[in-house]
Amino acid sequence: MSKEMGLLLAGSADMGITLDTESTEKFQKYLEMLTDWNTRINLTAITDPEEIVVQHFLDSLSLLTTGLIKKDAAVLDMGTGAGFPGMPLKIAVPEIGLTLVDSVSKKVNFLNELITALGLEKARALHGRAEDLGRQKSMRESYDIVVSRAVAELRVLLEYTLPFVRTGGWCIFNKGPGALDEIKAAGRAATVLGGGELSCIAVSVPMSEKTHNLVMIRKERPTPEKYPRPAGKPKKDPL
Ligand code: SAH
Figure 1 (cartoon, protein in one colour):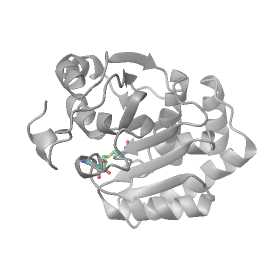
Figure 2 (cartoon, helix red, strand yellow):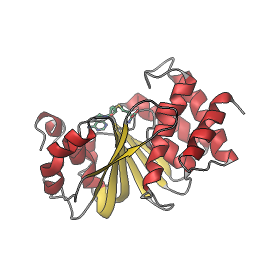
Figure 3 (tube, rainbow, N blue to C red):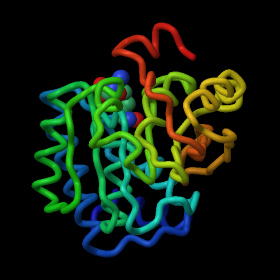
């Protein structure tokens, strides 16, 4: 086994997550494809393989410690980039249904190649913007869990994501040290969009010195029809 996969298994075990041989092989292949494609298209600023394991794979997997992501969950990752945090969740819990969304088509091309190369079922990558897809009947109020990392500040992110969540489902976001300030500024947006109370837990990601917080919100009521507003508007004029 490679040094990187040794690191991944040890770090996962520290978080109480077990990865079987098949999952570990898929992570190895993901690491290789990501590093290879990254020489041609800009997928990630992190190039050191061990850093990819810690800051991409383990940070993504830390979402599993919330206990909210059930085996048969329908999961959407908004603004997934090179597949984070959604893809590691799918590799670790193959039974979930996964939809990855990004507004940059070359990233979506990478993800579709990756899905094929890993032989993943119940996984798809879509090219589009949150503001447009969130108005589509087939996707609106349809997901048990919506995850997102490094896409926008929380009050903007809520407008990008809550429309996709079914009542009773959850949004879970990876956030850094500013999570509590973002939560203070996002209470109104949460209420307007049909969300409940915002909560935050600090997680320790093995071998990472950074501050990692997970911000969570439960969908309590359907999102009013006027949200999400047209593309660009949520960011320009946050709720
Ligand atoms: N989640 C990944 C990528 C973060 S970079 C990670 O943590 O590594 C932010 C990504 O969000 C970019 O790939 C960008 O194309 C995408 N994005 C930004 N605004 C978006 C929107 N309104 N709809 C869909 N994708 C968006």
